[in-house]
Structures are given as structure tokens and as C-alpha cells.
Length: 130
Image (cartoon, rainbow, N blue to C red; front, side, top):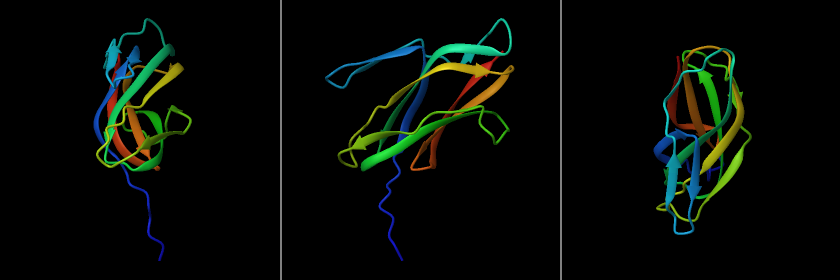
């Protein structure tokens, strides 16, 4: 029986914001943190949205992606491409930020942003569209 070497990280936080700035010393500024939008019309095409996470407990190269779905539905309305983050040790905090452009929301409601690492759900956050 093969032993899996996949170590799934743990989330400390998951935020949605307009944009972010990362600095060489590890600090990060998040601008326009949000959890709701009020589009004038639907479908709503949102120009740009950043998903920012703080993860720890992973090890090595960890593939991750984000699914966006309406609450109560299984099929995503959008899935990002898979990217990879590197954990040099289990105690390292890694702060991936993924910018999603031209995101289309078909109708008002609650949308769930699910973060997956190694195809395993790690955490989520929500966005309400009124």
C-alpha cells in the first residue's frame, strides 16, 4: 500500500478584496476588503477580484485552486486554473493571492469561494450579491 506524501495546509484566513500589495519583508496590504456587492444589473461582470489566503501546515509544492459557486449548488459558476505554492516547512505561513478577472455573476444571491489544496477542500468565504 502506497503512503501519500500530500500534506494539506490549514487556513488561517481567506479574504476577498479589490487588490493587494505584497512587500519583500512579508507584509501585505489588502485594499477594499469586501463581502457584498450591489450591482446595478444582472448578469454582473466584475472586472477584478482578489482572493487572499493565509495558509500554514503544508509542506513542499502544493497545488491549489478556487471554485466559486452559488450557495446550495454543487456545480461551480467559475473555477480558477491550478497554481502551486511552496511550503519550505510545516510552520511556514504562506500568503497566496489570486486575482480573478472578468468574473460573471449570473444573478443575485450568496456565492461561496472554496479554496482547494491537493484537490481537498481547505476553507471558504462568501460574497453576497444584492
